[in-house]
Amino acid sequence: MKNIHSFHIPVMGIGFTIDSPLKVAQYGIDSVISLVDDILIEKMRKVYSEKFEVPYQEISDKVDDFRAKRITSYLNFLQEQTEAKFNQLKNITSVKSKALKEYVDMLPEYSALKKEFMKLTEENVDFFTVKDWVRTNLKMGAIDVNIMTKVDKANYQNKELLPIEYNDAHAALRGFADSNLASSLVLSAGMNPRLYSYISKFNDFFPDENGYIKKKITLKVSDYRSAFIQGKFLAKKGLWVSEYRIESGLNCGGHAFATDGFLLGPVLTEFKENKEILKSETQKLLMQALNEANKVLPKNEFALKITTQGGVGTAEEHSFLMEEYQLDSVGWGSPFLLVPEATSVDEKTMQKLAKAREEDLYLSNSSPLGVPFNTLKGNTKDAEKQHLIGKKRPGSSCPNKFIALNYEFKDTGLCTASREYQHLKLKQLDTLALSKNEKKQKYNAITEKSCICVGLSTSTLILNNMSTKKTGMGVAVCPGPNMAYYDKIVSLRAITDHIYGRKSMLTRTDRPNIFIKELSLYIALLEEKVGSIKINFDQKQFRSLIKFTKNLEVGVLYYNNLFKNQKQTFVHNKEALLNLLAVEHEKLVLIGLKIEKL
View 1 (cartoon, rainbow, N blue to C red):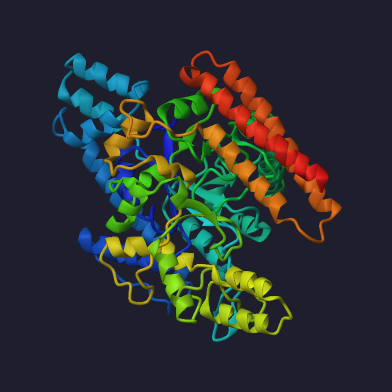
View 2 (tube, rainbow, N blue to C red; view 1 turned 180 degrees about the vertical axis):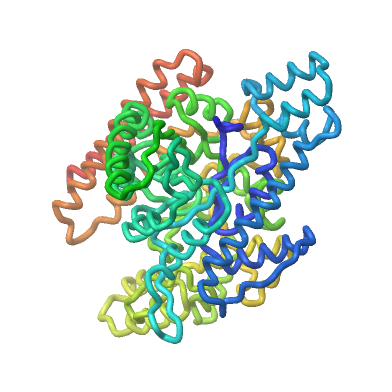
């Protein structure tokens, strides 16, 4: 069945969408929860069990395989409770049921479902016919889960290394695989061959004779080549990628996995033009693998979805992406941080986000993963970090250790944001014969790492009145650059009105076009790369910069043709878009000249 809505809510941080399905699934809206933090997951199961008066039995960290078991229990709980809410909505006692009205009202005007319902009510058909129609046609939103493939820390028991199945990402995968959910596993942060191979241990990821897959795989990617490589790798294991979710490399929230200058528009075009090749090539490998493993060979062809997310901000952009690139859904992230009915953000953080402007949103080096991280200036986690630096005790106590992935000083791993790691690294720095300036730079690079695996869940603890004694009150938040143009806390109905063009929630008129914004971010990144090159510059770096520049040149030409040829979309500001594009191109030409002089 086709999606009820043409948008989805992507995973945001660790805690911001941790309970989103309980808030939005009953309205047919898909959302994604993070499986990083099993401690938070267990706490949320306790909170909601008490709220819904459901018996709760703690899964302590003394229990064997506690991480996977906590995740399975929470996911089963989410399914039971969202289904109960949804069934309550479907079990209407009146055509004027408030919940039913909310469900239908939020649908886009072009929705066949909405048109059918309006027709039924206009024709005054009897109540039981409407009730049957509701039961047959309404669909619940998906409870999808996200695993960052690289966050796969090894674990120990009594100082003995546990088998790889107990690694964090492996255990999270098992937690999802053992759950009752029929939904998607969204894999992000690149390929992890061992984790991908582990998926094949679970039957729910394999198709039945009709091609139905209970637990689907979604790959979050930023370019076609990477998608094709990963898709083929999984197909050789008998695993089908049901969806490729293309995210902008820079115009997104959270970690920014920048491409070599490949821009969203050209990437989406490449997927559109090569979708059938991608599908047929991977399907061929898949059928061969299933046959060799003596597994069921489906009679029907597999479905393949192409979706996107990152930086979309208006109904016009949403519609354009859907139609131009023949997409199945568009993800809306950062604006949902201002929707209390959809996400979990504490009041103070929400107010900070509403007041944020361009200069308050920046790409930082604060993530211990070593990947640039979109963040909000003045967030309380950074303030907490600066306070500790001021006390000459930099670094976090590292209570959760989810990103303890550095093995420089300890075989069991340390997080680069931890006090232990920073203490050892600074001691090492003291022994180096460096200038005062060089030492200062290296000191800042060491101490700027922030404990985001705690910070990204603290907001949820505060909102639900849970103890922050162990974690502290510091909140990290990871909105994309798009957040600057949203300044109102709104309802779920209001944001769906905005997405579908019924009513705008933007008060500013200076928001840049999604494509222009991403291009400007990439040009700024290129300029930064060129500016940071000083000594030991080699041919490899030079070739990399040339390739980056050429890819951006291709992108500029693509957008120039795209905007010029538009007859319906972007026509009201076509000239302004072309002028802005020319400005960005001029910047690119000047950077190109700098690179040539190198």
